[in-house]
Image 1 (cartoon, rainbow, N blue to C red):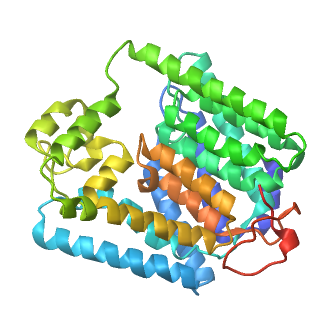
Image 2: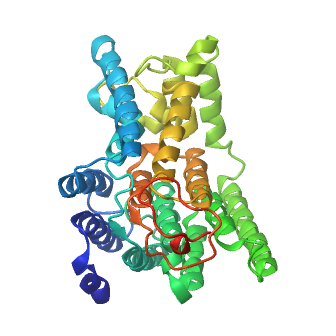
Length: 403
């Protein structure tokens, strides 16, 4: 920890704010046995992410061309939906922000595209330290029976996506300790009880380890089998805990299908009108998720209650809105110099979380994407290059790593 702080002296203001807040809140989480955190860590990280983007604007106000795509297209989408909500909807502002948060994040990410302000070696040190913090909190929580679904900031379905994403991004600079750090990360995921995180573990293992250009690839294929079996074990354990109860995701799917049963084709493309409430019958059947009801009317619920991001996104944004989100994120990553393999791995990691929780709509994914878009890859350890970056500041082919 002391060495990390000392090496952090040359970091940018954005690095100091983001890493400092994550580590400070991790310490608070460790010191909060039996609960996620004694402070509203999620809300504080929302402010941290916005502050990180704001500091970057002050340091380097020039926006890259691809960043303008995120700012203008994403900003226009937000403006249009905000206008419709303000003129025609009675829904409260917090409910609106919750439904369209992914596109607000997208606008902020436009300022980070291609900025190269996050240092690779420091990211490796930070991700290792953060994995150690998670290992402590998750380890003692499970060992002492304080929680079967431990978390250090908030619910682990959300935060583990960020932990795996930052580990993946720091891989080239982890050096000889990379395999040991991965084992620690895998252990954290497997004791977390999170099925979406377990699937995410496969999404990062395959592109990192299974490469036919490596002479030890048969061992890595065997390792993929071991990781797959561990994930299967986790799913089996969760199924036994549910004791035959119907999977709640199926309940959400049934509710979604009921709500869209009379939709015309065009509404599947555009999504519903901003903040269209679900029917009273659907809200009544999901009453046990009362905390997700409207912030202004306890008898009204919106798409957020469907949990799965893809169900929520199809309901609010339609096929076109969801496609727009993926395209803009893809442009932001590729034009920031993120190799094709890494772009696919990150999108797969985020997408599997969308089967369960909020994916692009949560701050932990926004942080991961922000670091990916603003990571300095110009001095990455030399490895055989097969996928040169697209866009962003050019740098020698020998500095590009392929996974």
